[in-house]
Image (cartoon, rainbow, N blue to C red; front, top):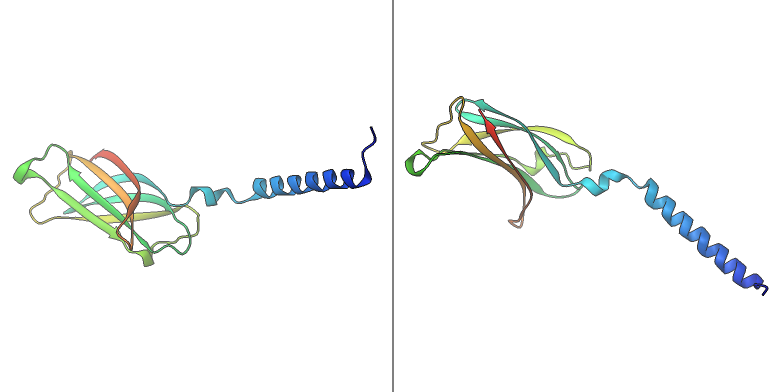
Length: 142
C-alpha cells in the first residue's frame, strides 16, 4: 500500500512538532520545578535567642515572608521556651535560584535557651492570605 503525499506530510509535521516540544521541555530551566523550597542549615545559640541558617528558593513575584519558630524540647508548663523570627517579603530574593539567609529568633517573654539544650526548629513561608507552606522541621542541640 502506497501512502499519499498528504499523509506523509502530516506524519512528518506531527513528528517535527513532537520533537520540538520534547526539546523545549528538555531545555527548560529545571530551577522552575524547585521554587518555594526551604532547607534548614545550622542552628546556633545567639544569646538571648537563636540563629538559624536557611537556604530558600521562591517564585518571582510572590509576596510572602519566611518564618522560623523554635521550641525547647522537654519544656512543659511554665518552663516552655519558644522563639520566633521573620524575614519580610522585601528581604527575600525570589528568582527560582537558591539563596542563603540567617534568621534571628527572639525568645518570647520569660523564655530562655542555654547551651546543650535541644530545640525543635520549624521554618515555612507565610503568604499575605494567611496560608503557610513549604514547612520544614529539624531538631538541634544548641
